[in-house]
Length: 146
Image 1 (cartoon, helix red, strand yellow):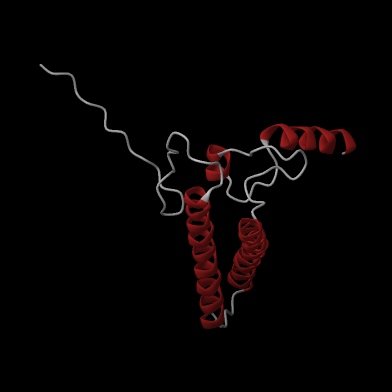
Image 2 (image 1 turned 45 degrees about the vertical axis):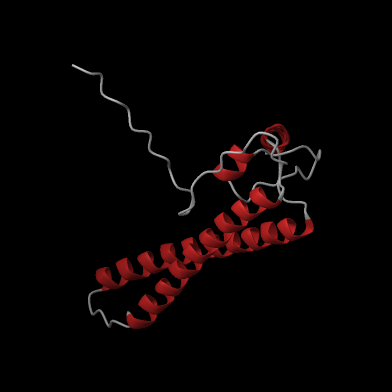
């Protein structure tokens, strides 16, 4: 009986296939810049769509609930939803900043030390502005100051 072949499933990054750099491909050249621009724009569109849906749902939800418990539950749900949307709004700003960095040619390089952040790290966190070493140091400093 032949051994079953394992099917490798690529996980999409906001609907975009991960990038596999070709040999000799320049870091953050045209191909990689276009790849990350596509990821950032797709992610931004997802977030903006969610924000717009929330706004329309909340505008449609002018329900007069006589039961205080039901009203309290609705208010709690709305509060959580608004906090989530506020976080997403801040994330959209980070995405816009990353797109500006892409235009300037600064995207993909650590703000602190200037080294390449790396394709895999950027695909995992497209708004990363620090390499893994500088981010780790930053987190250690935060813990010490807390």
